[in-house]
Length: 421
Image (spheres, rainbow, N blue to C red):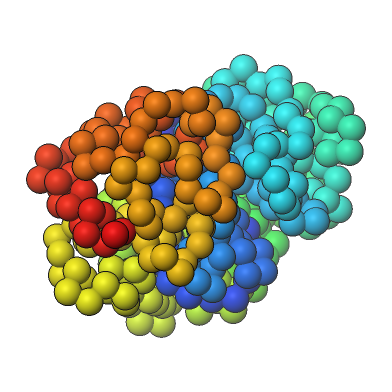
């Protein structure tokens, strides 16, 4: 069954050049749609409208970037440690290595941006959009060239090592662009993702099949790997293996040369939106609907690390078994609890009860929060998670998330009341 234009445009690639993750990354308030890993740092993008920068050695968030006015669909690393992010609000934000605001905006798309890619020389940023176009941006001066040709949303764009670029779209075509007119390969059904592997292009189909394109010879072939749409792809560092993920969360590992499935990994039983191999090819990183970035062993199919449980289990003694400690695990990446712990991406929660909003020492709050008359109590904290940070504390940099169950909210509030004294 074909996916909708909305579904088909939501799939992103990962860029990897990093040591192994120390633990699963937990902190987003919505599904993880993109991840970029470089050196000892990572950045993730989510339905919750945020980009989070991570210290991957500690599994702790360093900074929450709030700018986009909708889901962030795609990220790509830029020279010098920067980032480019884009999504539903149609804007591309260019971020420096440091700083809480974009250095520059690239605007012009008339619909959500689904994919980004950086040219091999680092000078050109390509963006694929549901408005049916691809735009080539000169990063130095913002000059843009608009490429048309797809009939409907363009879901993915990649650069080949020789500087040519390729696109895949809802119209079922893979288009290879170089000098002159593009070479177009028609497959007749939506294509959701695209990667470069060795000398080939590999596209993910809405029918659960991979399409292989040999750019030089012009040959195509296919391999069915799932009964549901494939929504995310990754190629191993040597290009010999392809990882494909479908809506039901399973991962299939494919030997590219033999066109055969070598292994299926039983990942989380929910959609995976993004995945990639680690630089050494031993692990696969996945981002999905559970809001985590997980690591899985290619050899065994087992999780690479336990879920991050740093604060409740490691330091709290009797409170580690409190039901609210389990709820707090979604907060630990951004917040600390103890008097000897400083801020992370969010302020320390030590002493929060009775404290006016935006008053914790050592943390740079959003200016919008400083004018709010909220004092943190059991009641106000519960309200925050009932209606969500965006509604209760407008202007916050906190990822959007709610706790729908009253019992879970009460458990978290009671835990915080006890743990932060």
